[in-house]
Amino acid sequence: MKKNKISGEDLLAIGYPELKVIGIALQMIDEKFGDYDNEDVLSLLTEVLKEPLIFADSETFSPIATALIEYNEAKSSAEELALKDNPIPYSIFGKENIEEGAIIQMNTAMSLPVTVAGALMADAHQGYGLPIGGVLAANNAVIPYGVGVDIGCRMCLSIYDIPENFYFDNQSKFKRELIAYTKFGAGAGWHGKDKADHAILEREEFRSFPLVKNLFDKAASQLGTSGGGNHFVEWGIIEMNVEDEVLKVPKGKYLALLSHSGSRGFGAMLANHYTRLAKELCALPQSAKNLAYLSLDTSEGLEYWLAMNLAGDYASACHEIIHSRITKAIGGTVLAKVENHHNFAWKEKYNDQEVIVHRKGATPASKGTFGIIPGSMTAPGFLVKGKGEPSSINSASHGAGRQMSRTQAIKTFTKNDMRAILKEHGVTLIGSGIDEVPMAYKNIEAVMSAQSGLVDIIAKFTPKMVRMADDGSRED
Image 1 (cartoon, helix red, strand yellow):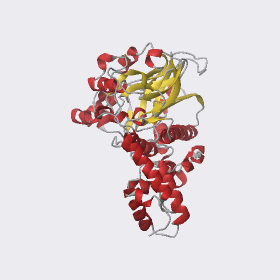
Image 2 (cartoon, one colour):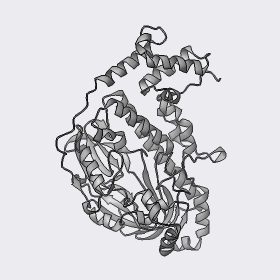
Image 3 (tube, helix red, strand yellow):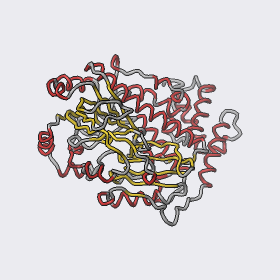
Image 4 (cartoon, helix red, strand yellow):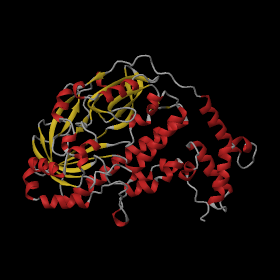
């Protein structure tokens, strides 16, 4: 049995409830149990967890026991929080194409004690807690499931000084580099000489919190990868309709690289841990349990906020590595680059009040802010500029949105259906499963029409070569 190798994840596995208690326990292990077998130490800590009162006066275990007692008292004293009698009114964009389940979820979210305002985007569909496409402004509280499991999921677009004809004349080269410098699938990572390096791995947060520290190796391995589900990296032709004074790209058609992915297994494990913690500390009715929140005045809320921001920056670093590697491989010059989170929470002003704006599958669209709204592997995406519409909480859709579940798509369509629509649109597909068939998504043109008051369209992106996970697998 190896000694003194106990991690925060080991303590979570035996039932330790939160990072504060885990941090105290890990410090005690380092100081007093360095020569003991892990099995023996975990056995002792299990006894403390079961009966903390017995160990309250122990010279060795009293700090852990005291923290556990305080945690248990706070948990037991928490009374179920009542929802508002009536949901706060909110704007719905493209309501005619939004399923009832998403609206029911949004109504529940608008009834939370901390809710200040909200909006539902035109691509909305049912999710966990806050619907996908939901925007929620809360008073000094953050909702882990209001951000989502894939913390910091984002879009990134690079526009090159390469004309469209060059792409069509050299598709084999672009396919080779796309395959060489991307990696997909649940659990996939880079290893050995291919392992990516980035300043994100030097962040203090990776050394500050036990759970985050324990996830460092996973984060380092998966840096610069894309995962599964609806994540992709694709080549396409972008048509600049407006010569924007900020982007400074002349009107015309150019080769572009578009990527969509988030914080991988690192972010997923953070989301799951803090959601469980929020549910323990925030007693909401059954209908709202997945909207459990953490006050930013608590250590737990602050820990999640720091971890969420780290995961968001980590997601951005993944895109930076993917784009820089491919750019170097093709020898192109980047004329402009745009990226945006769409699973995140921000501190923003709403009616002169500072609020926490959760965008779960929604694109920030404050006045002058650039964003990317994709369609599907055969439908166009759009480079947009926000108009800063207050009724949408300065937001827009994050894509076309699903009109069919993954399970239903697999039951409804075949590989031949997929091949036919790809051929019709001249798209080369590398990987993917039937669950990502284009017909499973809403009409992106209808979605854009429903939010014409929220964004201006700067350019249209047409996919030509798409890489996704081989089996459409979901994130680990």
